[in-house]
Length: 181
Image (cartoon, rainbow, N blue to C red):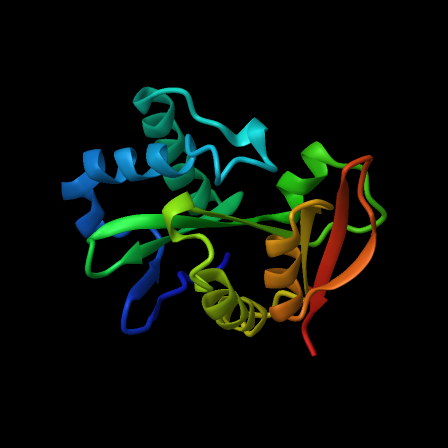
């Protein structure tokens, strides 16, 4: 099981769901809804769209259970000054990847979502390399990511975090991977 990742800089805090988040569950649900209903955020991943606060609450509840059962590990990007979650990073276990994809090997997968208003601020370029190192340092050998070929920004973020293009994934997406050195 992955140990929780905590990372902080002057503006951002990266963290899993914490006990203190119980008192702000409603705010956190709204933040998640804001991210996963944002047209800019979902431009290349429309299937991730949430349509209601109820769906966001279910997403959060499921994320908490999945974290503690080792299925996937949601971490939040909190903007400290705004006291608002502005992004989500999801590390998906190989067991869950097997449920959805037919591949020759099953690494952990990483997905990340950032509020539209925060895009273009180099937030993911700054934090993803650090988070990837913290994850790989826990003994995970490989992390994969799937990105829409037209999503130039996401590809640059992955490359900056030492992901390498591996192969086409499907008709519109490519598979990238990084390995522990």
